Image (cartoon, rainbow, N blue to C red; front, top):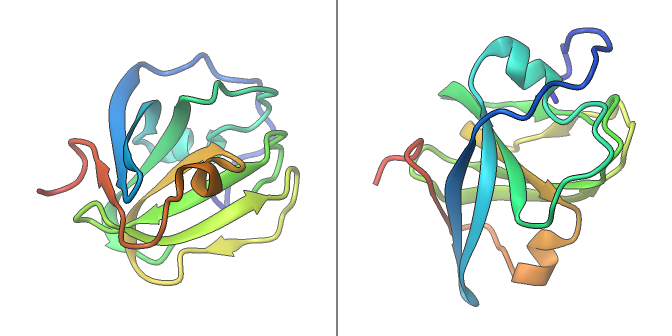
Length: 140
């Protein structure tokens, strides 16, 4: 969720799911993700949702490489946030973001995208900065 998001809205219908793979030292980990491509979609994100399956996530496409900041306002699910460079490498991981918090979580460097997954997934799968995310959004 972006710090300058729209006001509270009703939960959106799930967008179409797309395959995404995270490649770590422990192997390849497949997810199905909703991709947020428009400003309204990015502002809404996972707000107002109570649950997300373990193999799902939300990928935010910022359309250009720039510093970004996320927040958890109106988000009830604790999340891990993977800040991803244009080449698909993980730049930074913010683990276990606090639900409903308005504290901003910065990318730390210019990124193209953010992947949100359930809290604890990064630790469980051993995801580290430098690991690769495979999705058509990222250049090979």
